[in-house]
Length: 250
Ligand code: IPE
Ligand code: IPE
Ligand code: MG
Image (cartoon, rainbow, N blue to C red; front, top):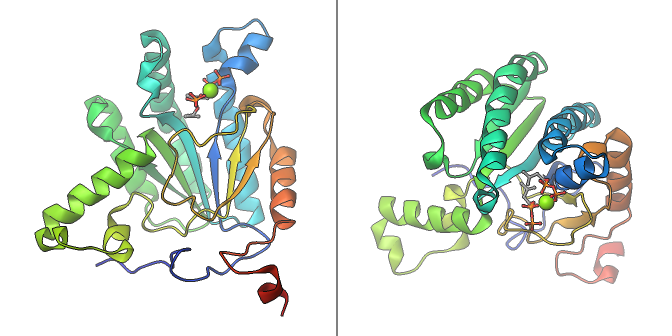
């Protein structure tokens, strides 16, 4: 079994002033484009540039894990042209950026259900992950065709396939290695751009004790400075993990 990372519901995680793991819902691309009388897809294109800047900023700050939501399991409900544009954009982004990520010692991971992707995209994803597998400055995880419920269901199915006897009774620790983010600590800070205050099926399990930050800034306009504001807000929070404030200060 994989080495177990501390779980926020079982032990008190170590916390630091710079979050170890930041999870982001990159929302507001369509509205950013609409405000500029541009097609929605232009917003997705600019969104890739925003991601590039945030990745660099996280690396510079010493953030260890950055996990971003690029395409949800529910985003297939969008018009076919937009879905197909997003898939092509994702493929092009992988092809164009992977060498740079590798040069910057960044490990790339992709989570989500890959079964619906075409062979070329599947192969490009595997190649990118393999090339960067041993990098250590930052782990960038991109969630595509990902859903938090899918993740938990998928983990339970895989766990039971490998250990049928666990069907009788299993614990959080039994399940944890089968979840998509099993090799990362739980996110310290969650950021959602674009003004909506919801989780939209992102990392349901892992966000148990994550500090939530919502901003009206649309994703294509989110930059290093905006990231700084989110981290400053995080630094003012008291992370109690179920304890009282008095217990923390004594
Ligand atoms: C987020 O931006 C990107 C994806 C979901 C792929 P949106 O496309 O949701 O932009 P808005 O929310 O319509 O502005
Ligand atoms: C969440 O954004 C998913 C991604 C950013 C990939 P959506 O724009 O799809 O979320 P809802 O539909 O507004 O909740
Ligand atoms: Mg949206």
